[in-house]
Image 1 (cartoon, rainbow, N blue to C red):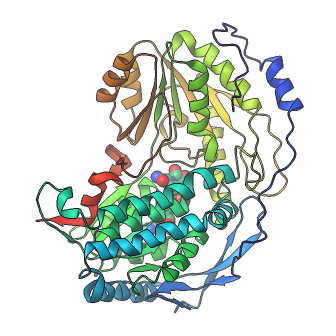
Image 2 (cartoon, helix red, strand yellow; image 1 turned 180 degrees about the vertical axis):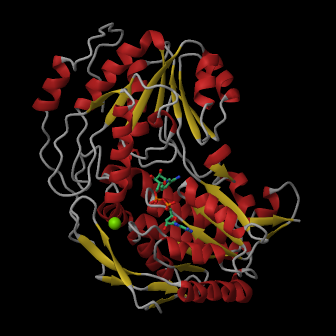
Length: 503
Ligand code: NAI
Ligand code: MG
């Protein structure tokens, strides 16, 4: 579906939305098309999944997980304390020693294929629960998160019996028990990214989902139970930061894998320094999306919107800095503004929704603070004129122009639907500006010239670089960062090395 509103090659530089955009926004009101959650069963209360059983937490404590679009409590979830985490690590150790490390790769693969197929069978339910618990639009969870989660299990099931070929004739062995801590922006997908390679390589797992989005990980635990994975191979413990810290610091964990804020990543790094634990960190980002004057501008605008507004900008590799060649700045800004008039913000379960709810009140607060700072620092703000629902946490898609490179909105990760637009004149200036950040997770390049893409790609200090597209993922393609975006790769052959010892 094309939402392009200005004619290709148009040279209009007027900063107001075109009449066509306004008309489009008003004339094309879609009737609500919500996905029905009727068939979805969310239990009122969830225990911990430890040693293949659902157990009451020793802490005796539960906490609510709410829907950020309605502020209603969806379920009560167990809060694991250090003892609960210890139980889970013991279960994982026992499973590792008794069966999983001894099982042939081909047999491990059978279980992992089974999990992958079950995710496909339950795709609709998983997508609905993901959107309810985390606030992301159903078209994202249905078309991106859930299919990619299944793809990660399929892909890694395929590696399980071929590991000796992955490292050029060298033999590999698993590490032991992996403690894995994941964030709230891609709850099921991050669980898949973590669990699939770990168990394919013969490790066992204790996974802690984020406190605002535990439900799809718990549904995954049910799938794993139904797949009859040997008890203890995968354990899922819910809780907040303290639970995560207890897991990362547990002396019998051999490997820690973390995705989340740079702050917490550094804290984990300090906490386990001096131990023999292996560590991978996937942290924040402040990606540059670089648009050259010779780019197909309408496609680039679609890529910019995909890169920062879909998923509410809750994406570590979001294209949150737009670097646009000076000669096309005004036309790109105009096209973007027009496109933003047509974005639909609202009910995450509605199939027409482009922008869902902000994941939590705390996250909304962080976004507001940074946007206020942007205004105070003198940048010019534009926010799409979306109607904001009465209940829930929302932030209208926003961009800033005229921001200086040293301003907070140009440097700090906002993790919301907020774009900072800056200009450049030459490819080298674009490279210098793009690399002028403490992060280095991803980047985008938009140009008609393949040679320019290759030139830029060799100079940009970013782990993932997209050419004339944005936010495309595949399990065979390694993902990870430079600098303060972390270290280690997930996906691809490279991602396997995080979970094996190469002999
Ligand atoms: P966070 O880093 O606190 O949360 C991520 C995970 O770490 C959650 O499961 C949390 O329970 C756990 N955790 C928290 N403290 C821990 C500790 N001391 N030890 C072990 N685990 C711990 O992220 P938060 O507070 O939700 O978001 C803050 C900012 O972080 C966001 O505004 C965004 O900029 C960034 N972020 C980046 C993500 C990414 O994918 N790179 C994902 C989520 C947030
Ligand atoms: Mg929630």
